[in-house]
Length: 472
Image (cartoon, rainbow, N blue to C red; front, side, top):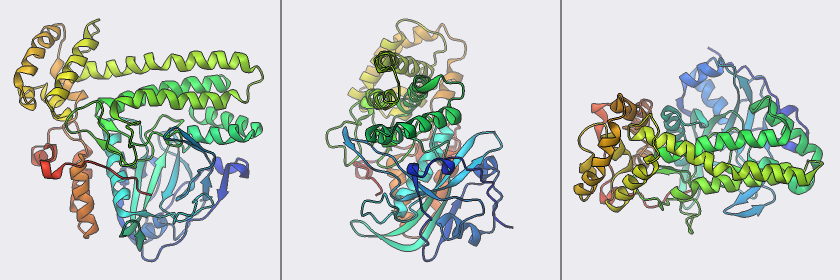
């Protein structure tokens, strides 16, 4: 068997100012950890033998048709503009058009230094590679738009962070790696020809039929509003919502210090670098609007009638909070078993969340238990749930099959932080059993899996993960 990837590259045909041509830097002794056969079939990739795939997905061997590049972008990081970022430890091998007709990027992450590395080593250590593999695939199974993991490879080399760590490379698949920051870099540099070319490319690839820059902006507003509502509905906290981590395609991208909440609280923060709580769980909708406003500012630069463009862009961006709320309400209605709409629904949902926060109720387990009779057991004071439940039960009387609605909207399984950390610890010792088990169970998050009930358990006090870390 020979590995075959049917490349059909488009971004590499854009002007050289969009990227740096950069091959992956070979590693010493690659070993394949995982290969995603289901995703490979969608991409129309024919797998090869294990040693060949290890060499390819580590970057030691370039497959036929690859045109490796590191993409240029800039971005606001925690609100401060950095004029040049770019792929500092990633190389885009190329693109495929899948069996479903969608074009996708295939990128090696942790593949060595590039011209954008800013004195970094361009490498990744094993922990963040496995975290992104598990969490991105779990997000896909949850039905939330996301980049996906095609392969993970050990490099046989040591990566030096706070201490020596085993190195690894992730093969990431995305509808594209276009970010808000991709537009920002050309706007900030006053390179209007490049900005216009990028805008046309993004429209053709992601929002065909959109009417110019403002049509693109409307498409991004829609997709980001749906995405963030999805995050909120499963208790996901991205952790580093910088504009260079905001995908034009509306996918979750860059799983650095991400985490899922255990006990619900709206101000929950995990990221070790988010000291002011900018990207806390409850702030994510507002940050999404802020990020899209930065996109609007960039897109306006290429418009001839800037006053009219500012007026239109302002209208589009100002409509986004209501759109986010509409998507949030649709998701959370389903989580409490509602398919019809009532003017009191938002207050009913908000009351439940307030009581959950006051009673340290587990986010995932509480919503899942609403379909049975044990939701009250999640509360420190079960009477707090009972008081809410009376109004909820009256509202449910208008519904046909609320249990089915709740089961479909509330996962039993998420990649809980303490289980992810335990998985990484085992893998560093050479045991990949927890990694493979997590992937298997999380592939069916809405199904009851009694043999995996231990993975639904919140952390004990000693298992609580208080901070998550970026993998750079």
